[in-house]
Image (cartoon, rainbow over all chains, first blue to last red; front, side, top):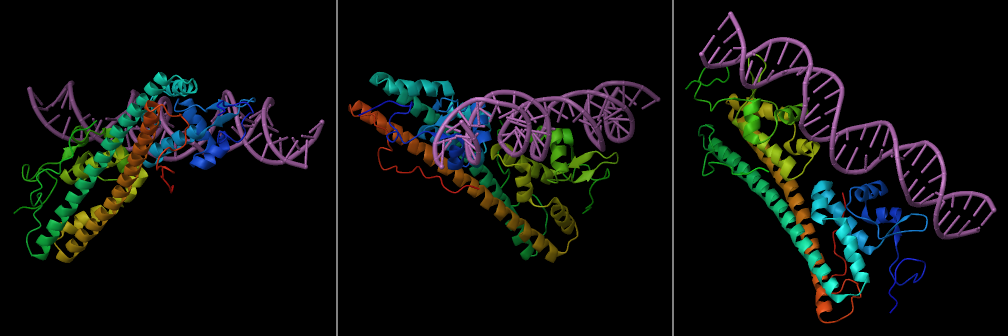
Length: 175
Length: 175
DNA sequence: CTTAACCTTGACGCGAACGTGAAGGTTCCA
DNA sequence: TGGAACCTTCACGTTCGCGTCAAGGTTAAG
């Protein structure tokens, strides 16, 4: 099977390289944002055209969608995202090591990528846990208020104080 | 029982009012941020001293901690937080309606507060679901890579394409 | 070869969320 | 009655994450 990228050969085999605007439409980002992410070292386009146009492959698309989600859905800063995605240089190296068919290097590149994803999963899980904690906190406040409401209906005093078994609404440890 | 705040009376009964720096230490925020939050209408100190010092009660502390968590842990913007906390004016009104002992108004104030918390819970749950979706997404990518790894170990082709039952990594619906 | 549509690299602008003085008043303890 | 430590209100500076021209070069179609 033919296996070589870029140039003008194989114009239907390799799913095609997209220009920045198409990528923008596809990902819901703006061209400006995509260039900015590149400037911040979050990704580099798979290739450049003869006239220096940025050209993105399917892998870049996936990465950009992930970046967008991390940013807009999860609310991470670009600096945090940079740490999570870890060093774009490594990615291009991996990309190259895949073109070169050395199986040993391919294997290590894959396990490295998996390790990175595992760390991403850890970070995301921590985030979800924090949000969960806030949900629990809000639920506790809700319960507290309902306690007061019950007091009121029963004609008791509106005496304040945590009411029932809710001594400290938790939420410890900053940073 | 004597029931009147501020002045210099009852110096041990009402858990004490804190000045901005103590509040900052307690909440992990900076005085500047706290003032800024006030400027943005997220909260108002329970009282002011004779010389216009901001004085915060336990309720303010709780609110500020919640704001801090929404901002730093959950990553909401102050505008979003403002919507979630909804109109500080309502809060001071509620606070007043509680001092005045009208039980009917107390009841409606409580149910209103509970409704607000329910809306907060909805927002937080949506957020958690988005993060969960990203976790699922990352897990899918992990599986994809492990598929490739298995191919490699079995001496198969590194042919790309989603590999197994992972046609589209999902993650739909923006905004 | 022209031309419209797209791209490039600057560079300036902007709102959000504070940081950081400056200049002066307040508290409180000795 | 001092101070030292805190507070107040401006007001300007900063970083982040882009938006928005400006002045050109590139591509694909006709």
